[in-house]
Image 1 (cartoon, rainbow, N blue to C red):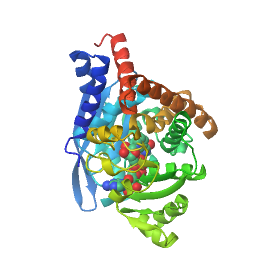
Image 2 (cartoon, helix red, strand yellow):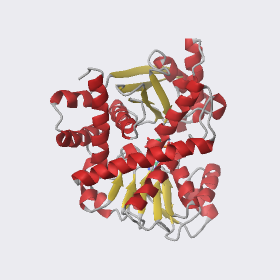
Image 3 (spheres, protein in one colour):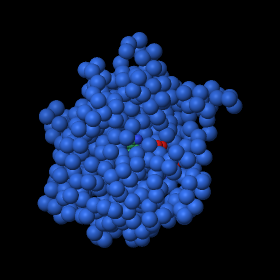
Image 4 (tube, rainbow, N blue to C red):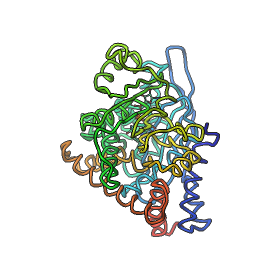
Length: 418
Ligand code: NAD
């Protein structure tokens, strides 16, 4: 299991890059110190009386552009995790070379325990607490775990009510009717697919039918399953927080998803859709027979105790921080290709950037235009990371960090901050 915190994991990855780039202490300090940490108590009226939650925003670095990053509603969202995610956002935006910085936010609570109305109250309370700190040219939040376009709409509305002006660019991942971008919902999965296809082409790996196992069947997990299935990949396993399903011959993820929405879990969907599906645990899913493993749920899923048992040859990190540094070393030695989160899941923030650009122009692109713009950014970033990894004989994660760190420091130097 992972005994280190997510932010310690970020620091480990950063130190590896710092060594290769020969960074000095001042430069390292700049990359491990957030610009601003906002931690506030928010009070919300619920059916069982007034409740207090912790609300966070960590603004890590804005040298390359306004702070950018999602908001997570999760009982385990704490400051250390939010800090690690904010730092990773700064690296990620730099890896795909979009003009944005890094931030992340969260509320420590379990939305599954609350009604839609209560979730709205929490969302509005978060916006109210952060109104001075967010804005289209300042800090632009977006969805993350257990936050949705509807929640983005509540936050935008509360922000606009408080500021008295219309500012759709304050948040991305909004419903289309409020200035959301076509293609934003599947963007993270679609971006991951573009990267995977470029990897297969570059490494000369025969494409079909590769067996794919996906941990997490929410927004990102579902869309990547759907897109890969349509492209002819064989989806052999998916899971949610309650457990997973496996069939070595593959299955149609669309049918499972439709039934999961009705029944509440992947397991119960399996019983209804296809009795040949085997019920497995989340641990078994990570170790199952497959070619491509896609963690698309929580951080720390792949750690030193299970890294030896993973059978996939490719790990595409759609979740943020799913592999610990110890597991990374084991996987690298075993010759398993890990496409790091800061590259693999950057499709989400890239289309969020497109949404912000469209809000600024007040002119909107078709989904086709959005995807046509996304593909070269994702595949171009992959090619740069791959070339850098080959040059130094390092992992794709280390190579991505080198590129991200270099670009952030270049902007900080140009501003005279370091
Ligand atoms: P989501 O809330 O839509 O789905 C999360 C899924 O993970 C659900 O199926 C849930 O049941 C499952 N899950 C939760 N706990 C689990 C556990 N202990 N074991 C197995 N499964 C578990 O969230 P999402 O938007 O799909 O995000 C998933 C991951 O992708 C997160 O790490 C997030 O930071 C990352 N990510 C999301 C986006 C985006 O655009 N949504 C972009 C980049 C990265």
